[in-house]
Length: 216
Image 1 (cartoon, helix red, strand yellow):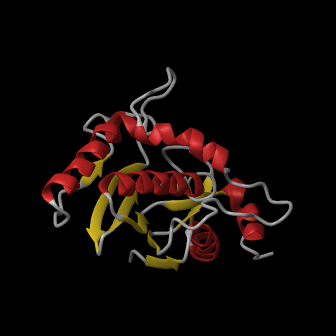
Image 2 (cartoon, rainbow, N blue to C red):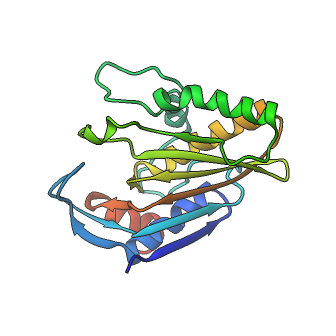
């Protein structure tokens, strides 16, 4: 049976620490047969829903205990943001999220401004029929949006999600995107709900995760 984990957090930092604890304690341990780090082991939650009620609270990145290397920084997040929002692609990159999202971001903004807030069509997809053939397909697959009570909420889905190295940078950048869209639409900032059937920790990060989460 697939176990659904629901994690409710105040901000992005708390969400990360709660996910670390749950993945260390309850993650399914297995050997990767295909994909990144094939042949190595990871711990993974079956399906997780992470509800962050105040994702805009600063800092957007977690502050880790002394002796634990930080998983990210705001400097990195800000350098990562164009990868999320623009179609620019470096020569060695197979894809960027921005190549799919750039035009959709503007479409969603205009949809809300011109047609009103009561719609279920303001969804931004990542990927196309060719991505299944990539050696490393996009992990983020979609950003759904909703405006309720004059607040813009995001619902995002990751097919696979590295909890240690990906989660903190991904959500901080997605929150910055949400803040940009709220300012363009003229509404307030809302919740961030993230879902994945592949939130995981690679073996190299297991002890780091235990220490960061205060689990010894």
